[in-house]
Length: 349
Image 1 (cartoon, rainbow, N blue to C red):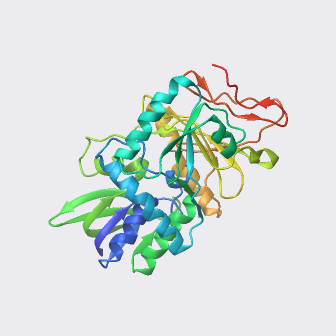
Image 2: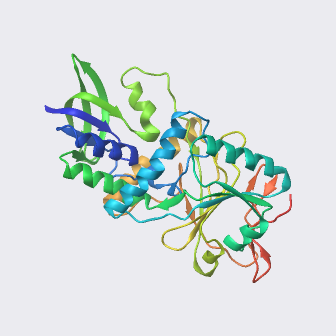
């Protein structure tokens, strides 16, 4: 039976960042990940935005960690050659009714310690983003884009160089307290030739993402349940990818479901439009968790899982006459093409 000081469950960005931190102080650190590669689930199925900290309640852990983490992420990316772009973002008010809410968001960000926030008018919006129509916007200069996949791999690489042991295709199937340790039962390998092994750890850290509630339940903790939110993106390529220069957001959903539809200029020159947001419950939740099987099969072929599913994305292209009905409440996004006079998003209510 292998022995570990610390065993981390989950090889996403959180698990790998933890592995990097603890392996610099302790020996015998293990990280186990059920998929064939690190970061194959929600850690790389997102916009890749390095957020500023404007959205969270004052004095909350999210606010404090986001503001500090924003700075530390840029520093880590520079040091370890992770591609990123420190570009800022605009949060746009589509009409006059949203200006008050935009001002409240600015104050919340200032209360959290986010620097450089300012409100700008329609003319400056057009200078920054010629194809965006809005009455006002919040300029958030500290926001940026990072390569999510390379960030995960960089954390994992540093952890490995510091002596951490990373094991992929390793699914946790049991957790059993034993004196001052926890015996972690693992199923390692593909379904056809999987073997079961046990690691005895002094400390177990649950960083299992969408499956964190299932891991907690293995130790009898049923007080937490994750209700995944499914999102889909459209990736716009070709000549029309120039319609967006950097990051453009609407105000977040009032119900807190998501930050709403936004535009993300990617590091490779396209832009993402989305995500949609819908709760996945009951059998649908389990179907989406079928990504586990799909990721294994795709990972074995040296590919990444398709970008649809929980926190996933679709690829598509804008064609002449296309109209995407993305909305926040009753307000439509005001994105249009000056050259063709086509409204990609109607500015009407």
